[in-house]
Length: 378
Ligand SMILES: *Cc1c(COP(=O)(O)O)cnc(C)c1O
Image (cartoon, rainbow, N blue to C red; front, side, top):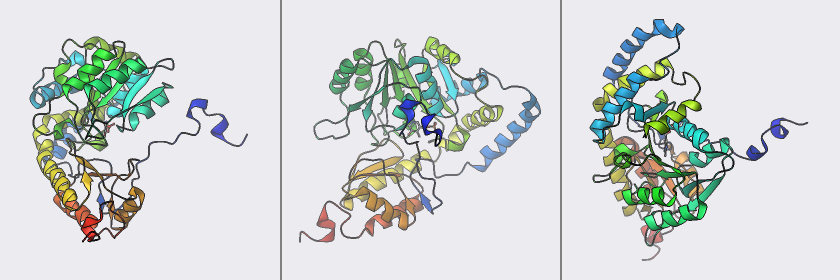
């Protein structure tokens, strides 16, 4: 036998792992992290709180992470205006682990998960790790290539009769949020499914966007997942969470590893939630850079998609791989999300936006699909 290839589970053979490049370049705009460092007062408070806990590291952490769930409940009441009881909250090491718990509990090899591509690439990967078949639904409405209508969602749910439906709002990588009507359409057209709405970017949504948290009451199969990795500038802290019916939440205890949230993770996340105002202070600045990129990319003859998140998907490129490499050569790392003629760029600091837009302005002839910027039509 040559290697582990023959030992690997047959359904995993030939698959590639999730792997956004982590390159050491001056301007990193490829994984939608916050570009802003954790503020000094938050660091000081976290160190104090950790100091009080470290002597107890001989003991397992609170398996029910009750103090953390109380802090999450208080945060959601303020941020979204929804009262979520502690029993209706769950957390894990990043919302990716939250999603894994959901698939472990409600998926299975004899049932189908449905998503609407392009969306978050980890949804099908997590299903695959649990040997759950994945149905690639599609997006697109007249005049809106990445939109999703209630009618389309309902028809696709009826066709696949899924056990799980993944919605992403605001959607990564396309940027736009879904309407409540779309979520309700999925809930009603997939009567045997757990409906997961991934709201990783909720804090960046444009005014008027309503969270699916408002739809939880009376819908015991609906789940809303969120994360502290993006707006809270805490990607390294690894804390994701969800809100759902307490009975559904209770089922997740069947699949999680005992004490899955370490003492330090619970402490740091709790302190971060206590300092939510400090940490979220950069959200408005990030939204400004996002809207600035949409405007300037349009002026540059490219096709940005309107965004409710901290990134912008833009089209109008002849060859996205060629442009990705060219931008990297200028010290700007963006994301090739596998959509032809498109790239995705995270909204960072004003200086990072300057660097990105300067690199775009300097794109040589042959990068843009629309040639008017280069005067070939004049
Ligand atoms: C970034 C992202 C997440 C966050 O994952 P964590 O594990 O919480 O860091 C979840 N969903 C989507 C759609 C994302 O883009």
